[in-house]
Amino acid sequence: MYSYMDKGPIMHQVLRQELVASLGTAIGTNHYLTDAEITSVTIRATYAATCDADAVVKIYFSPDGLNWDTVPFDTLALTRTAGETCQRTKVINPPKFGYFKYAVYNGNDGTAKVITNVKVWVTIGFDELGVVDTYAPLGNVIQPQEVHTKDVTPGDLLARRR
Image (cartoon, rainbow, N blue to C red; front, side, top):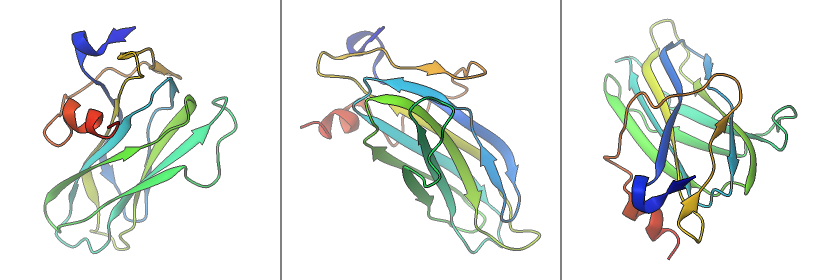
């Protein structure tokens, strides 16, 4: 168990891909949430100078980790600036219990229209008691590779509850 007073929100990197080819998809590691009331998803990627379409994070849900929804639970489009690194965060309202996986789709069509340095983080908030007991990965254990709090702060997450 993690106390908000001790740790703050819990952040995990669920996808890291050096390159996503034109019309390609990168799929992150599945993970299990329980009692998460506030969750945000952050994507960061660098667009090639020739890119003319946004990358999209597709978030899929499964009640048991085996049977996955065929339609995304939610999506997050990363508005592009060709040749630049872009980042966006979105607060989602997940079911109290279940498995999630994240897929990043590169909608650019063309040989040189790649996106690079793709990263997706999940930040998990807390229940009414200020305590969360949430993260149990399915498959490989994911260690946070980078802590990024520039765009999402604990205050941002808590403001949503007010």
